[in-house]
Length: 231
Image (cartoon, rainbow, N blue to C red; front, side, top):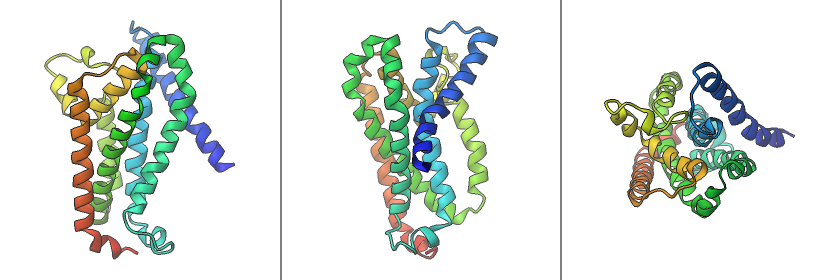
């Protein structure tokens, strides 16, 4: 029953957030963006995947003694399993909502076969960041509280409920410095606009994913002895 409710929540949670944001921007601020709720949905789904993955890994980092020692798992299995669990929830929220995107923009069908590519790239990126945060959490006890503030700031500079074109040119560089922007933009192009990302966007996202994963694995292996102390 718990897993079923979890899957249902994976669908309803982004929908509820989408409804709140859409109401504020369409009814109160009177935005005229076409199909604005779908624009929000295409950004909120990947945002929640990253947020939940990173938050859960940090929260579980200091419980390694229970989670790893009891089941005699290798240290990296903890962040990997948590990120993969959130990927399943991401897909559980995305797949049932695909028909809604198609109904409002049938053109997305043409490039839908490309969707597994950003999913894999985003998975590698999230896994790399989660490995890094897992290590940092061992040394900084208050990291969850720091991340609460950091994620709040990150949410506003991630184009979840706006497009890059809507950002004044003088501030656009701030949004572009955010690594999540690349992935959210690719998902938005495929799910909302129905267009194919350019080769530069694919290359940048792939390079970012590999860099994140390599750095995460190297740091994790370097500090593995410290991690094992928490068994």
